[in-house]
Image (cartoon, rainbow, N blue to C red; front, side):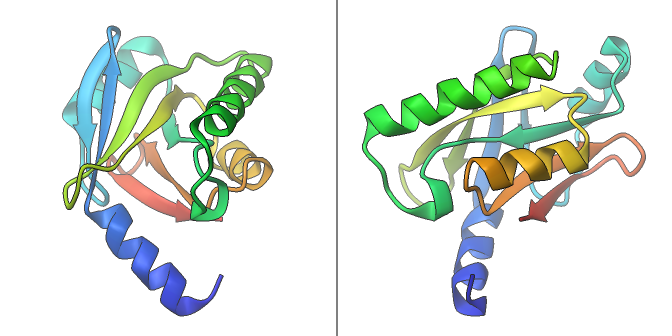
Amino acid sequence: MQSNDRARLHSLYLATDYCVEDPRLRCVLTVDESSDALADWLRAQGYDCAAFITAWNPRSEARPDAENWQHMRELQQAIADLELPALIATGRSRVDAYAEPSLLVPGLSLASAQALMQRFGQNACLWFALADGRARLEWQ
């Protein structure tokens, strides 16, 4: 990825609310900020980290909805194969009306998140570790 593309995407990722909309947990994550709600929930569930990830629009190239939903089903299966839960989530732009279906995966290590990003053609994900207590943007 060229540096100007990465810079453009970085600013878009910073202008996004990462909304966990699952009945088990409802919270909004922001890049480089802490989340007491997520930290408390992870501790209560026995996890020390989580990844906010999608399979939508690989490499930030618009795809038809049917193709994107197929990618999301495949991502859900890959997560199920890891025997981890997946919570319903959406990345919502604060700049325009863009929203991207996503998942919050508690217990997903950074290495596993990076492997899934590579497999599903994603540029980045949001990763949260109790150790530092903030949501970090992790690039592929």
